Length: 246
Image 1: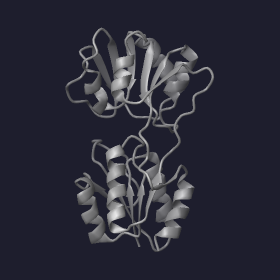
Image 2 (image 1 turned 135 degrees about the vertical axis):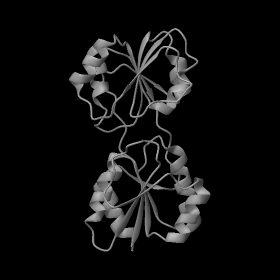
Image 3 (image 1 turned 60 degrees about the horizontal axis):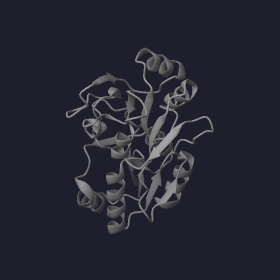
Image 4 (image 1 turned 90 degrees about the vertical axis):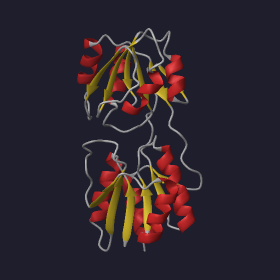
């Protein structure tokens, strides 16, 4: 029985490994192809996307998987909506696997905003040297912001337009609190901008910001598609697949 995982996250890789241990399952993971050198999951991999909901609908109709698990990034809204539409059209069971967002503690100075544009608009007055960790594809949103200096961190180089005063470092988590503290101190950063992605791989920056008293502009994640069962734990996703992919 074929199971399709829409992946690209640590949870998706853990899920593919867990499902590979179950007898009678063929696991195929789909990666969007936006990272030049992605961490690959166990099992078969296809890359480059499907061409929107219509393309995914055709793929599901042709390959007839027993189930689909959407384990994409919490901010991959387009892919999640495409999966919901395609699975509804073909009758394939769909599960969403989303790690929880980061909880705010009493000592955290967070400003929650609904979008990247709102984050860019909020920056003036919060600081002058910005630690920008929202991904390379977000940099054009911050390009119109003037009078600030940006340190942008991403896995792959960004494409223009980018802010006029930006220094880009290419790196991939996991990160340590000590390393994040050192980076913030070296570049004299005074405000952090991030997305509420959740997970442990990149949480250290939030701990460092709390310890150093930096304000954090936190972009809220988009809502999951309606009508799709959601779990936050890989073990629960394995159980769901075992119950539905038959």
